[in-house]
Amino acid sequence: MADVIRITDPADPRLDDFRDLTTADRRPDRPGGKGLVIAEGVVVVRRLLASPYPVRALLGVERRIAELDTEVDSAMPAYVTSADVMAEVVGFHLNRGVLAVAGRARPWELADLAGLKRLVVLEGVGDHENLGSLFRNVAALGFGGVVLGPGCSDPLYRRSVRVSMGHVLAVPFTTATEWPGALKYLRENDFQVLALTPRADSLPLSDVTADGKVAVLLGSEGPGLTDEAIAAADHAVRIPMSGGVDSLNIATAGAVAFYALGRGDRGAG
Amino acid sequence: MADVIRITDPADPRLDDFRDLTTADRRPDRPGGKGLVIAEGVVVVRRLLASPYPVRALLGVERRIAELDTEVDSAMPAYVTSADVMAEVVGFHLNRGVLAVAGRARPWELADLAGLKRLVVLEGVGDHENLGSLFRNVAALGFGGVVLGPGCSDPLYRRSVRVSMGHVLAVPFTTATEWPGALKYLRENDFQVLALTPRADSLPLSDVTADGKVAVLLGSEGPGLTDEAIAAADHAVRIPMSGGVDSLNIATAGAVAFYALGRGDRGAG
Image (cartoon, rainbow over all chains, first blue to last red; front, top):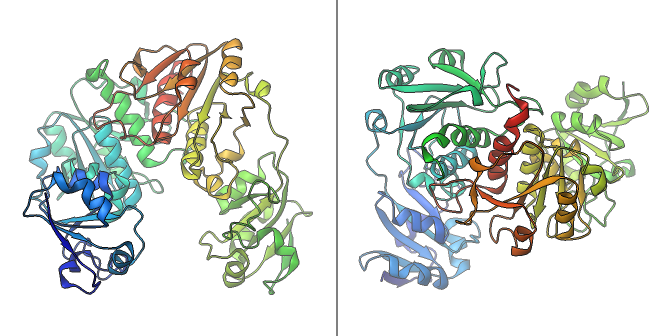
């Protein structure tokens, strides 16, 4: 049972972590801001509660807090208020009726991730929704972690957390400090690095066998992977497509590759 | 070269087909409304121009109309105006700078689609973005057409057209008049109908061979397929998942299934 605290004044300073989420320069989830992680909705708040991120407080309407009440301990403040007061605090009307806020967890290192069997490496994925969808697909299809190369956004940004359905909170990730050095490091640590690209001279995905450790390298939808990144991979691979090179969204292309490369040892699943 | 007509008055009646696109009861792309098809942005307008839909007119800023000018004939009105006038006409600021409007084409019949080798059948897919993404994935991965069962939205709705990147304009689709009779009809026409569902007693996707005609049946993300629809299929199949049954978006799950079932005869693609 949470420590339920009823609040009627939208200016109450105890709600400051939840304030003005849409105002860019005050958003608490901005890197360089307070660095907080925001979860929206019962499903995602549950995933935040189950994650390594230290949850500070919940804010919600009566009914949503009641749904979560038994899942948090008595030291956890759960601020209950009306939908209107919530809207005034966060800056928009929140359909999902509940938010939770957490601090950041200790970041993973590339060396931690190199112990996993399957990784995704991203280059230039700046779109928060694509990033969130990628994490959702990584979690669903059994890839272990994500390495963020240059040009990637913060996956803990509020919109990425929401689009990932909270799965970004369960998937280890790290930011590469050297590029494309991180790819070299993965190859030295027994990963087969496969660069997914629509280039005509790449191998069809179905021709690749992936019995050992695999890292799938994905670039952004527009410019795609840099030549440097492709050159640092073991192979360039492509999904055979009918409708032109822009036909699959990056997160969808990722899902197809994760499925195709992961089937080997999930077997009947 | 289009018939370029410069317009400065947002009330000009020649722009009526483009007017108030966000006002629900006036939206020209609503079924029951004028039944028009709206394409946004150069890429999607190009796909509309290449489609069977009869294009009536273009509206855009100078630079975007110039990009498309050589692709349309002299009978095509291309209204050139400022970004501000465009925003006033359509009701929002349009980043993509150009729109085209078309009438509806002759609808396909189920019998037309039954001549194709691979189909997708949807039940209860009401979300316009998911519907658009599904059409994009159908086009990319070589599935020939889409059958819309009960509870599906109109794929020619403006947002679906945009999210599909215009691929909805190239993929034949039809609305099933009998349900689940349409599935029975497909089976009688040599289709193997595969219902994609997270049910534990379904077959893993990798256990299914699809050498002949295949129809993949997909339901909405929340409630999933109805028992009637699953019972009318040949097999229930699932994508083995790690992260729980909500882990893949419907369009993404579709893409994985289209890839897995389509690989057979695309070969090295």
